[in-house]
Image (cartoon, rainbow, N blue to C red; front, top):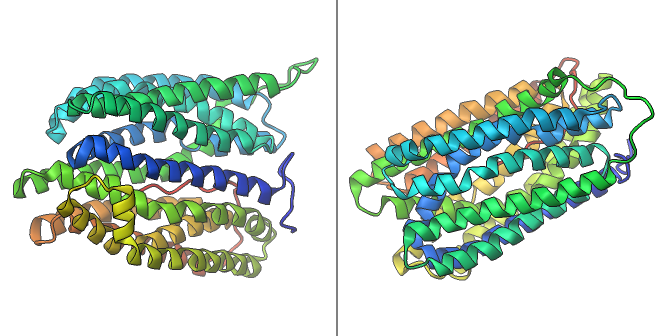
Length: 449
C-alpha cells in the first residue's frame, strides 16, 4: 500500500502530519503557558490546579474519548449516514450528565483531597465536559470526511484562548490564590465553549445538502460498538492519575506542609516537559495503522509485524535523543519555562525531569505499540495493558512514598516503572501474534500522563 493512500480529501500522511502538528503546537503552547501560570500561582497553586484535573479527565474520557475515532470510522466506511447526529444526541446527554456530576462532586472531592479551593475550581470547570463532548463529535465527522484541519485548528484555538484568558485572569486575581487558580479553570471552560461554537458553525456550513430521501440513520448501538472499547482503554490513565493525586498528596502531607506544592512541581511541571517528545511521536503512531491493518486483515502477519517493528524503531530513534536532551538540558528547561519557582523547587524539578527522561521513550513506545496492537486486531490487549500498568503505578506510588525516603521522587520512579512494564507488555503481544487478526482500522488514542 502506498503511503499516499487517500482518506477522503487528504492523503493519510498529510492528514497524520496535520493532526500531529496541531497536537504538538497545542502541547508547546501548554508548556509555554506554564511560565506565567507558575509565576502567578506558585508551586502550591499549580498543585491545586493539577488536583482538579484527574476527576475532569475521568468524566471527559467517558463523555468524549473514542468519539472522534468511532464517528470517523463509521462515516468513512460509507455506512454511517447520520452518525454524527445520533452522536450529538447521545454524547450531548452524557456530557450534560458529566457536567452535573462534576458540579455535584465538587465539595466531596475538596474534602477527600483536603483542599477547600478545589470545590470552586470544579464548579467553574465542569461545563467544559459538555462542550468537549460536542467538539469531539464534530472532529470525528470531519476526520471521517478526510478533513483533518478542523481537528488541528480547534486544538490550537483551544490553547490560544486558554493561555490568553488564563494569564489575564490569573494576573488579576494573583493576590488571592484560590480565585487565581479557579479563574484559570474558568478560562478552560470559555476556550472550550468558544471553540465548540466555531467548529459547529464550520460543520453546519460544510455538511452539504440533505439527500432527497433519508436513509436509515446509524443506530446508537453501532456508535457505542466503536467508542466503548476505546473509552475503556483511555479511562484507565485518568483513573490512575486521580487515585495517584489522592494517595500522593495525603502521604506527602504526613511528611510536611508542602505536599500540594511538591505534587504540583511533579505533575504540573515535570510531566508537562516530559510529554513534549511524546506528542511528536503521535504522528508516527497514527501513520503506522493503515500500513499494518491491510496486511493483518489479509493474513500476512509476518509482514504486518515487520511494519510494526519498523514503526517502533522509528519511534525509538526519535524519542531516545529527545530523552538525552531532556536529561542534559533539564536545568535550562526549568529556568526558562518555570523560572518563577524558588531555587529549591527548581532543584526538585530538575531532578524529577532527569529521573523521568526515560519515560519520554517508554511512553512514546507505548503509544506506537498500542496503535500497532489495534492494527493487528487486538484492541483488548491495549486495554489490559493500560489497566494493569495504571494499578501498578498507583500501588508503587503508595509504597515508595510511604516506605522509602524518596518523597515526591517516588511518584516519578513509579511512573517510570509503569511505562516500562506497559511497553514490554505491548511488545510481548506483538511478538506473540501468530493468528489471523480481525483488524479495526482506527487512529490511536493519545497518551496522557
